[in-house]
Every structure is written in C-alpha cells, then in structure tokens.
Image (cartoon, rainbow over all chains, first blue to last red; front, side, top):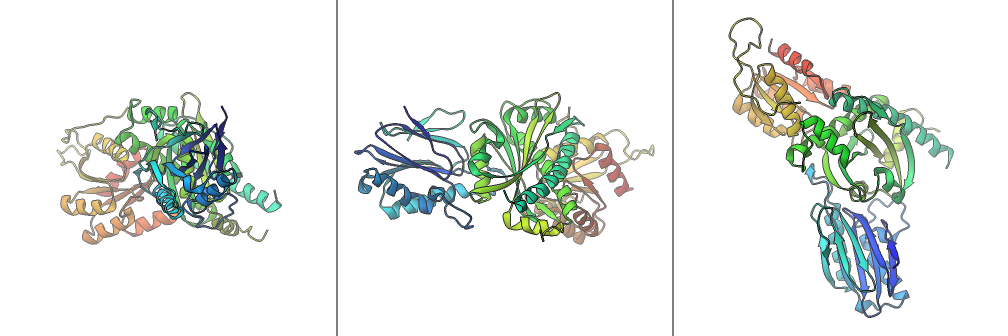
Length: 158
Length: 200
Length: 141
C-alpha cells in the first residue's frame, strides 16, 4: 500500500487508498480532512498559527490560517464535497515542559485550527492534542482509520 | 550561493568554532576532564526538512535543552543528546544510569545545557564585543523530529534557516551530541556590522 | 561519585586554627536541584553548614531575611528574579552580606555588574571544588 509522508508545511491528498503519515509532531498539528463517501482524504502538517514574522512562505500547509482552505480546495479538485468533510487532528503539545515553559506554540496551533474549522463549517469529530509528548499520526484513506503513536505507549485510534 | 551568504557562513562558522570550543571545554570539565573531540563546526542555510536530520533519525529518542538568547545577537540555542548519551551523562554525574527521568535527572540535564550553552555564548559575546543573555533552559526528552520542530516553531523560522552546528564526542564512553545555534536573521546583519564587515 | 546526603554537624575544624569553631552557615541559591546538590556536597565536605536553599531570586531574598546566613552562593540566570537583582536587594537589606556568585554567565560586563552590586567573588561554572572553598574562606576571613 502506498505510504505518503507529510512533512512540515505540506498538504497531501489521496483517493481510494494509501496511508498518510506525519512523524515528529511536537508543537505541530497533523490535521486530517476526510470525505468518507468519496474516499478522499487529506493531511496537513501545520507548523504555526499564522505567518506572523512574514518570512518567505511557499507552503499554505505551514500555517493554520491558510492550511484548511488550501486543503479543502485540493480535495475538491479531486472530487470531494466540502459539506461532507469531517476533521480529526493530533499534536500541539508542549514538549519543553520542564524548566522554563517558554514555548506554547502547540496550544496556539490547536486553537487556531479549531477556529478555522469552525469558520469553514467542518465538524471536528476527534482529536488528541496538547499535553507534553511527541506524536506520530497515520491515516488510512481506504478504511478511514486514524492511529496516534506516542513513544512507549500503545497506539490509540482516533 | 552568493558571495555575501558565503561570507556570512564563513563568519558564523568561525564564531561557531570558538563558541563550541568553549562549550566543549566546559562539558569536559564537568565530566572530570574527560577528553572531548570536537567535530568541525558547520554553518549552513538549509530547508526545514533538511534540518531534521541534524539530530539523528526523526523517530529516535533524544534529550534536548533549549535556551533563548537575547542581547547583542538574539537567537535560539539547543544542546541535543541521543538518549544513550543522556544515560551515560547522567550515569557519570549522578552515580548511576537512571531507569527513568525524574526531577533530579531532568534538573541535571537542565544544568548541563545551561553550562554548555552559556559557555558558548560567553565566547561569542567576547568575540563580538556584545552581551548575550541566556534564558532559563527548558528540557524535553522525546522523538528527535518532534523536539527539533518544536524548537523551530518557537523560533518561528521561515522556509530556510541559518544554523551553526557542532558535534562532539568522547573517546571512551558513548557521550556525543550536537550544539545548534539559530541566530535571528535580523540580528545577523547587525552582528556582521559589529565585526566591522557590514559594508561587504 | 558524589554523596547525596551528609549530616549537618561537622566535627572537623574549618578555620584551621585549632579552636572549636562554629560552622559557617550558607544559603545555596541555584535554580537547578542538581547544582544545589553539587555545591552542598562541596561545602559540607569542608565543614560549612548549609542552612537553606533557594531556586530563584525572590526565594533567595526571603530566605536570606529569614535565615541570616554567614554566606550565600548565588546563581544568576534564574526564573522570576535573576541573581543580580537578588544581590542588590540582599545588600540593601544587609550591607554586610557575603555573597559569592556561582554562574555560567562569565561575560565581563556581568562579572563587573555582580561585583559592583556587592558580590564578593564570581565563580564561573563549571568550577573546581577548591575554587569554591577558597572563595568562601576569603569572604568570611
């Protein structure tokens, strides 16, 4: 079966079958959109809530405020219907939780995506977010199964 | 690659050399004067995905100490240690390799990171005739890619990142690691200016 | 390897003058438990009595006022309140306070600021145990 890795800032869409995989989700969030009827699924590996610093950016999937609409567009081009889309997401943790708690980008990513999904009218049906552990996310587009892996723990189905 | 960016990287590499030299001396002292070998520092401009391989396999377990740098040259510094090195280091400093990382173990990693990174900054500050202030260090132990991407997200880096990176290793025991410095882009120009090379 | 715990009472003579001397009391200030343990091990071995520990500048000031130690070892980079601010506050409360800085932050301007603020000495981490004892002896001597 085809296995497609979704790197930081990328959006990947598959139809009918194949697995979408995001590894090393720390403060990043893996966002999944799925049209179950058309069996079209997409994953974005979101890095920051918005391009606040305005640096060079060729990847809409990198930011929460551009990822959702870009992914919806790509999926629609392959035949997905926006009104049928459902969302799941995992990630957004704060790994550096001992000593100075300096970075809470994870929480900001999660909240920004929740807002974007709500604005787009896409229901968020399941999520495994926040906390202090890194995650790996695997989405089987053929079956719709979503698994979340954390080091030293059994995988959890989302 | 332009002449200017070549030149920028040369300067950064030299600063990295001196900074990392001091940092490894500090680590060596901490480890009872164990001999540490310094891998020649590299300064590079890389894509985010490319930078993921700096700390080994993306899913391998690492210990990381992160410090925000403010003052004359703002940026982000991290000490990244493969888990086996975390174990050897803690075994040496605390007397026994720990089964799990509790408060004392994490606190030890935090202090090691503080001493190594601050020594690096002391050398850099002297070289550039500025003051550099390290933040209180933060510690994470998790998948390499998750740890590194969290640092990059905290730094809000653009698609391409300037990194000064140095590896080190001990002869006898398995203690190796990477010291990474990500200077803020706006401050880099200021730094080159401070070195009297801003006109190039 | 290091000893984790040591008793508080010390029979040997830290002053080296043959008299039965009272152990000098120390407040150890550092944000990491590991470094507090290291410093405690070193000073206790030489007959000093650690009467308190603090993990940030605010706690250091409060503990100093409460415990009135003979000596203080002070870190600089700490949460809530940094060591320089703590030195200034303690010196204002007690101009005779004897504070030794133990910090990795060895940049010249920082050393000068610490000494100007009233610190008696500045040890750059990682330090040799002998240097700590030497600095403490000089400060109380």
